[in-house]
Amino acid sequence: MFRHQPRGWKSFLPTAALLSKRSTSSAANSRLKLANKVAVVTGSTNGIGFTIARRLAQDGAHVVISSRKQQNVDQAVNTLQGEGLSVTGTMCHVGKAEDRERLRLGAYNVSKTALLGLTKTLAVELAPKNIRVNCLNIVVAGCSPHL
Image 1 (cartoon, rainbow, N blue to C red):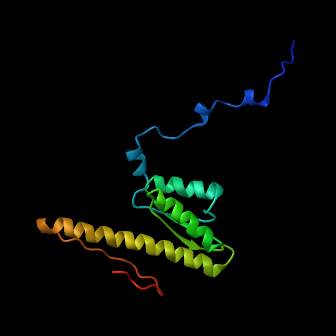
Image 2: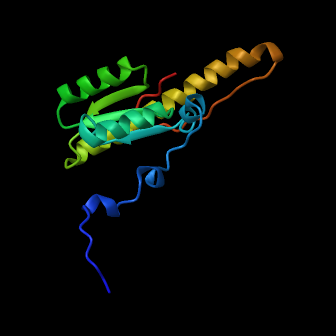
Image 3: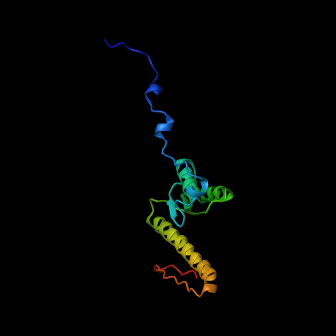
Protein backbone atom coordinates (compact mmCIF):
# COMPACT_ATOMS: atom_id res chain seq x y z
CA MET A 1 0.00 0.00 0.00
CA PHE A 2 1.24 3.51 -0.85
CA ARG A 3 2.28 5.48 2.17
CA HIS A 4 2.73 9.25 1.78
CA GLN A 5 6.13 10.44 2.89
CA PRO A 6 6.40 14.21 3.24
CA ARG A 7 9.46 15.45 1.40
CA GLY A 8 10.43 18.82 0.03
CA TRP A 9 10.36 19.48 -3.69
CA LYS A 10 14.16 19.73 -3.73
CA SER A 11 14.49 16.01 -3.06
CA PHE A 12 13.15 15.31 -6.57
CA LEU A 13 15.87 17.31 -8.33
CA PRO A 14 19.00 15.55 -9.58
CA THR A 15 22.24 16.53 -7.94
CA ALA A 16 24.26 19.39 -9.39
CA ALA A 17 26.99 16.95 -10.39
CA LEU A 18 24.57 15.15 -12.73
CA LEU A 19 23.44 18.40 -14.34
CA SER A 20 26.88 19.87 -14.86
CA LYS A 21 28.34 19.36 -18.32
CA ARG A 22 31.18 21.87 -17.88
CA SER A 23 34.54 20.61 -19.01
CA THR A 24 37.16 19.92 -16.37
CA SER A 25 40.05 20.63 -18.72
CA SER A 26 42.73 23.11 -17.85
CA ALA A 27 42.04 26.83 -18.13
CA ALA A 28 44.54 27.12 -20.98
CA ASN A 29 42.67 24.53 -23.05
CA SER A 30 39.26 26.05 -22.38
CA ARG A 31 40.46 29.52 -23.47
CA LEU A 32 41.29 28.10 -26.87
CA LYS A 33 37.84 26.64 -27.59
CA LEU A 34 36.68 29.84 -29.27
CA ALA A 35 40.02 31.29 -30.40
CA ASN A 36 39.77 33.24 -33.68
CA LYS A 37 35.98 33.49 -33.32
CA VAL A 38 33.83 36.61 -32.94
CA ALA A 39 30.69 36.47 -30.80
CA VAL A 40 28.01 39.16 -31.00
CA VAL A 41 25.85 39.22 -27.88
CA THR A 42 22.84 41.55 -27.81
CA GLY A 43 21.49 42.81 -24.52
CA SER A 44 24.81 41.91 -22.96
CA THR A 45 25.55 44.74 -20.54
CA ASN A 46 24.09 43.07 -17.44
CA GLY A 47 22.43 39.91 -16.16
CA ILE A 48 22.47 36.72 -18.19
CA GLY A 49 23.66 38.46 -21.38
CA PHE A 50 26.67 39.92 -19.56
CA THR A 51 27.51 36.54 -18.04
CA ILE A 52 27.29 34.87 -21.46
CA ALA A 53 29.51 37.55 -23.00
CA ARG A 54 32.07 37.08 -20.20
CA ARG A 55 32.13 33.30 -20.66
CA LEU A 56 32.52 33.52 -24.44
CA ALA A 57 35.45 35.92 -23.97
CA GLN A 58 37.00 33.65 -21.31
CA ASP A 59 36.81 30.81 -23.84
CA GLY A 60 38.86 32.85 -26.31
CA ALA A 61 36.30 34.63 -28.50
CA HIS A 62 36.41 38.32 -29.25
CA VAL A 63 33.03 39.52 -27.98
CA VAL A 64 31.00 42.44 -29.30
CA ILE A 65 28.82 43.78 -26.47
CA SER A 66 25.64 45.65 -27.33
CA SER A 67 22.84 47.45 -25.56
CA ARG A 68 20.35 50.24 -26.23
CA LYS A 69 22.31 52.66 -24.01
CA GLN A 70 25.89 53.65 -24.82
CA GLN A 71 26.76 54.25 -21.15
CA ASN A 72 25.81 50.64 -20.35
CA VAL A 73 27.95 49.42 -23.25
CA ASP A 74 30.92 51.49 -22.06
CA GLN A 75 30.62 50.19 -18.50
CA ALA A 76 30.37 46.53 -19.57
CA VAL A 77 33.28 46.84 -22.01
CA ASN A 78 35.47 48.52 -19.37
CA THR A 79 34.64 45.82 -16.83
CA LEU A 80 35.47 42.93 -19.15
CA GLN A 81 38.56 44.58 -20.63
CA GLY A 82 39.69 45.16 -17.03
CA GLU A 83 39.59 41.38 -16.63
CA GLY A 84 41.94 41.06 -19.61
CA LEU A 85 39.24 39.89 -22.02
CA SER A 86 38.97 40.78 -25.72
CA VAL A 87 35.80 42.86 -25.91
CA THR A 88 34.42 45.79 -27.91
CA GLY A 89 30.96 47.28 -27.83
CA THR A 90 28.39 49.25 -29.73
CA MET A 91 25.01 50.74 -28.99
CA CYS A 92 22.27 48.77 -30.72
CA HIS A 93 18.50 48.69 -30.43
CA VAL A 94 17.67 45.40 -32.14
CA GLY A 95 14.20 46.72 -32.97
CA LYS A 96 15.75 49.27 -35.35
CA ALA A 97 17.00 48.05 -38.73
CA GLU A 98 19.79 50.66 -38.96
CA ASP A 99 21.12 49.62 -35.54
CA ARG A 100 21.10 45.93 -36.52
CA GLU A 101 23.01 46.77 -39.69
CA ARG A 102 25.61 48.75 -37.70
CA LEU A 103 25.99 45.83 -35.32
CA ARG A 104 26.48 43.36 -38.19
CA LEU A 105 29.05 45.57 -39.89
CA GLY A 106 30.79 46.14 -36.57
CA ALA A 107 31.20 42.41 -36.04
CA TYR A 108 32.38 42.00 -39.63
CA ASN A 109 34.99 44.72 -39.16
CA VAL A 110 36.24 43.12 -35.94
CA SER A 111 36.71 39.75 -37.65
CA LYS A 112 38.32 41.40 -40.68
CA THR A 113 40.75 43.31 -38.45
CA ALA A 114 41.66 40.09 -36.62
CA LEU A 115 42.33 38.33 -39.92
CA LEU A 116 44.54 41.17 -41.16
CA GLY A 117 46.43 41.22 -37.86
CA LEU A 118 47.04 37.48 -38.07
CA THR A 119 48.23 37.82 -41.66
CA LYS A 120 50.68 40.62 -40.80
CA THR A 121 52.04 38.71 -37.80
CA LEU A 122 52.57 35.52 -39.82
CA ALA A 123 54.18 37.48 -42.67
CA VAL A 124 56.79 38.94 -40.32
CA GLU A 125 57.34 35.62 -38.55
CA LEU A 126 57.71 33.55 -41.72
CA ALA A 127 59.63 36.07 -43.90
CA PRO A 128 63.07 34.83 -42.74
CA LYS A 129 62.10 31.38 -44.09
CA ASN A 130 61.18 32.87 -47.49
CA ILE A 131 57.49 32.13 -46.93
CA ARG A 132 55.10 34.75 -48.22
CA VAL A 133 51.74 35.19 -46.48
CA ASN A 134 48.80 36.67 -48.38
CA CYS A 135 45.27 37.54 -47.40
CA LEU A 136 42.15 38.00 -49.52
CA ASN A 137 39.39 39.96 -47.86
CA ILE A 138 35.89 40.88 -48.94
CA VAL A 139 35.03 44.58 -48.77
CA VAL A 140 31.41 45.37 -47.96
CA ALA A 141 30.02 48.42 -49.76
CA GLY A 142 30.18 51.43 -47.50
CA CYS A 143 33.00 50.03 -45.37
CA SER A 144 36.50 51.36 -45.77
CA PRO A 145 39.18 48.66 -45.79
CA HIS A 146 41.61 48.73 -42.85
CA LEU A 147 45.10 47.87 -44.07
